[in-house]
Image (tube, rainbow, N blue to C red):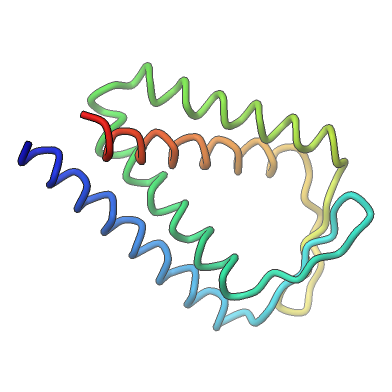
Amino acid sequence: MLEAIDNAKESATCAAIGAVVGAVAYHQTGAAGLAIAGGAYPVGLAAFTGAGAVVGLAVHGATKEAAKNLKEAATFATVGAVAGGTVYHQTGAAGLAIAGGAYPVGLAAFVGTGAVAGLAAFSMKKSVVR
């Protein structure tokens, strides 16, 4: 029981640190915009903070938890990568405008983001279910 509580604390700490890093990145770069599937959407503080928290959870899952169960971590990352590739093929390429520049977002970015989201889901599962 104490191990589960410690693990949940570690997960929450990693998510909080990631959220702070995301918020700092937003304040350093300013607002951003995402163009995808024929539309353009603003990306504000909440999106940066949420993305930072997801990356923090993914780091926790990839470092602490994956060492204990590599096969399950790889499965979560692979499913996330496939989901990211599926989103890319459904929407097409995207573009990101940030800090005065515009950057293309292709298949590799979608797949990588999906893998990170998969590792974050793995970390959440491990912090909740023991």
